[in-house]
Length: 67
Image (tube, rainbow, N blue to C red; front, side, top):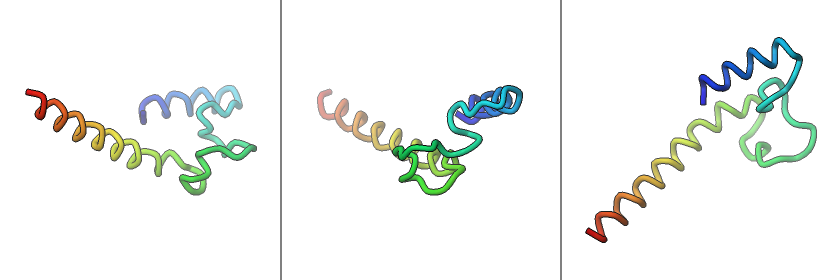
């Protein structure tokens, strides 16, 4: 995600765009508002890692139970 964000940041800088909302917050209310102030990408990373860990633990115990 960080590598992709770095590439998109470069594209945004060259084109003046706001892809992935890296340059500024979107003008309308979004779920990103729950993550705090911009840059929300910093808050999104621990959330993503936590969700992946939660899914992994669930999957691990589900597979272990059925074996």
